[in-house]
Image 1 (cartoon, rainbow, N blue to C red):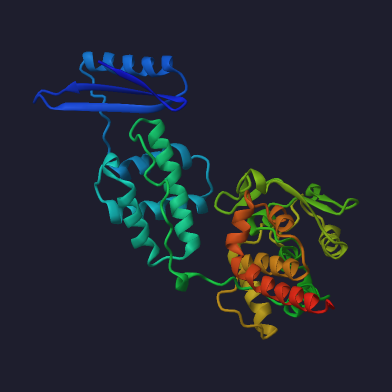
Image 2 (image 1 turned 90 degrees about the horizontal axis):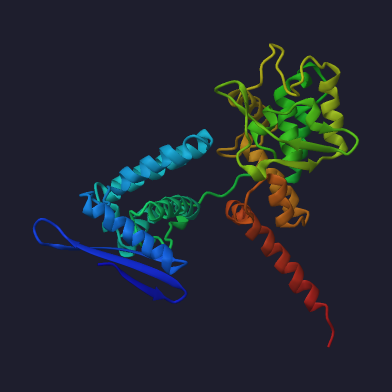
Length: 365
């Protein structure tokens, strides 16, 4: 017999049955908007029981997670994002093993976060927790869970694992720009102009690789970012996410540099090697490393993506609003920007705080 009760403004349905060993089982589902829907759910499950169908779903958590990734994420996410899902899978298997999903409680999941967070940075813990939460919500929709065991969990992390964003100072940026596009034969190397473009725009490497001449509006001084480059398939692919599709304002200096490449226009692609191919990540990083070495600029772990960080540092130093920076970078949420550049933001905030105090101290009473 089904039990239908009202919980606040929602309805809850509960059915019970006995197995072959005369052990009683219960199945409950909450948050139905109407009593009728709760009754339909109960009747459907009772009908399945009468037909001998096992309605008490039980699955190993990590098996469900892998299936969820394969079904809902793998077909649409970028390889870099998929790698994060795979890293999360490894962490879950290491802790939960063959634990059934319905056996995991909020306390159990908190223990996982505590253990994982002890050896990982805050950004990584937030990433893993966000992925698991999405998986758990899916499991609830599939009737494997009733409650979200990730709800209300405290995120623990190791501050010593947090990496500081490497970036160039304004003087170093100016020196790198000058060296990259100096007027000699080497200045026609596409990689050097890609470096300049990254500094001036903060674009991702794959977005720069995918630029075509029709993406540039010379009159309005804008670049439209509508696609990215798949280095494995040597073809266009969608941008990282919907918010990555954007149009950004660029300065005349960059347009002047790009016009040099346009004069030897041999393709609709903006950045092409003399062999008619798009410069690879290895190629541009090799050029970048060589230029920094020539300039005696030593930054541990500095690579092409660090130019994006340098772009942000330059804008923050000039007082540009973090929301505007986030939109320019193509982040889906401003929290992504604040989390990624927390160290930089704190650095410039301390300088701003000093300016505020100095201004207040000038007040006469």
